[in-house]
Length: 121
Image (cartoon, rainbow, N blue to C red):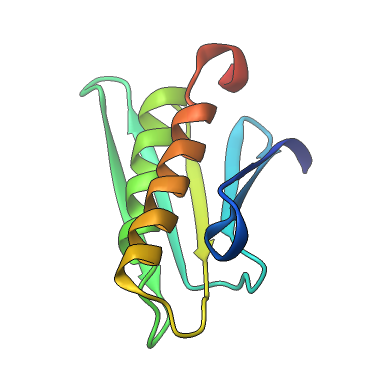
């Protein structure tokens, strides 16, 4: 496995990171913060014939990263047109609704930054 890229977005309590590793032609992406863990895993597969990505998700009990992992896997798979596994685990004690929104926005920025053709191909 080869690390292709590492990105960070945000500051303070809402800072998140994204690592991207290649395993063959496939991608393994991790979305995390300082208290990173495995909260949810999403695997996306691209279908050339139908020009679409399909996603399956496994979420650990009590964790809420399923939408984050699923959305990131789908977007990245559509962009790179190859299998993508996203592992998402972000924990923040006493998190507020504003912090949740900021973290989700920061994750979205990271995914978008990796979708450019120069980065993904």
